[in-house]
Image (tube, rainbow, N blue to C red; front, top):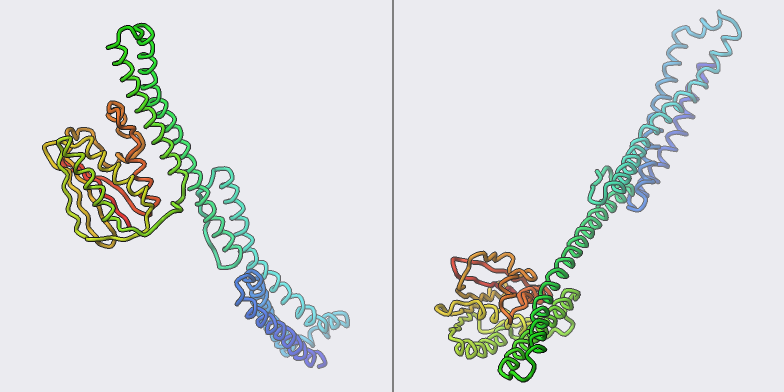
Length: 393
């Protein structure tokens, strides 16, 4: 009968101890779960709390079953077996009260913790693949603790590094193309200059007419070569810049009108017609005045250089959510023109090289200046008419 009195005490004592422990862990969990930096700690406390609850339930069930068994005559059964078995029967509830809850706690806690351990192993394998195969891989996000946060940061870093690698690859390819194109453009006039210098050595100053003609050609070639070097230097300087430091608020349309009046006289002298219709009276924004003048001049020079003299060069401007300037001219020959590529460096290679006053960098410089102003530039071709579209904020 003493054993029957002990069993309820075990239930009460163990219940109070485990219940109190669960309550304390729950309070700590509530405190830590509100802190993002301690979510992983809260996760393990939650696992411990749940495991303790399971252990408490198992304890109550085991002791209740033992009490039922003893009530059903199990005590008399052990008594008949002998004193040794009676001692076993007396201490069996204590052993079961400790062993079963402990086993349940260890198993439950291990299962829950093992989920995060497997996730850490998964992350380790994925990071190893990133090291072997390169950046760009994305890992699966599970949970919302520090491990998941670390995984998200690694994913973002992997994508950024992959983009950086691709940018560096494109930049290197771009540098190689630039060197190739510049070498070609420098070699052509230099070869011509060397040839005329040899002719000058042969003829000498005695043949004044030939001498003057050769000097004129050499001077023209040197002027073109100097222009190419200056534009290449300007483009390189713009390409390495992040922004213009000397920006000022100016009326862009007023600046454009002044340039249009200058080019109207210049084009009329060459048999071209320049007309414009600016829908807005003014549009003030922050610009680098010198560079914006360069943009308008390069675009008008390009239109003037390749325009068909039977049609006018037209300029329009509209103010919607941003300023849209459009310069349109009819081409003498539109065959092979790719509007999407005309702002690439040296795109119009052969044509530019056959035109002494063109370096093939003018529109590339325009694009870079506009980008540094936060704008966009593009082109469209309809039949023989080429339109360049400039957008400024």
